[in-house]
Length: 116
Length: 114
Image (cartoon, rainbow over all chains, first blue to last red):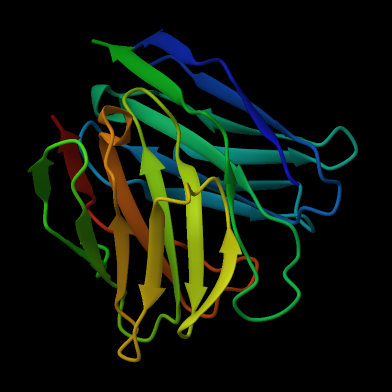
């Protein structure tokens, strides 16, 4: 099955600096890579995702890049703000065989702290 | 608000007991996923249902079981509870359960086993 490794496990940055979180996956057939943000005691929420036919996707201060050859993808947050402090999870899924056959494999998470 | 609801929000029980967690997916979503999140741990996939049928199993213990009903709500049953079962249990739903579908998470049920 799919295995997703995520680094670093903790990350502290000064407000205004950039933060980068990296993930690698094992199954070369994987084709969908979402990122979730989980604030303390809250539900995970999708913040951005990328599909394998795209190399980069950006949404305001966050961006995700995908390197299919190396089987890794990264989350970039620019101009970090205190409200970016949370745990971020990457995930991967391989092509489903039809409706109802898709699951996500999550990384172990990165705890991001933005220091004011 | 993701549109996914879970009850109860908190549950405190004793070792050896049995509990049932309930999840209602977003309107129109056919796929329901259950996850376990222990303290400072990631999201461990337990089981998936699609339109009433079990579709995939992850790291689910034999003491745990689940089902999805005709109205698409799902229940996760945990029995012979142990201290180590204390965790946040999330359910998530997705439209058709095909790759690329966004999984929307519910608010979770915090289970404490004493």
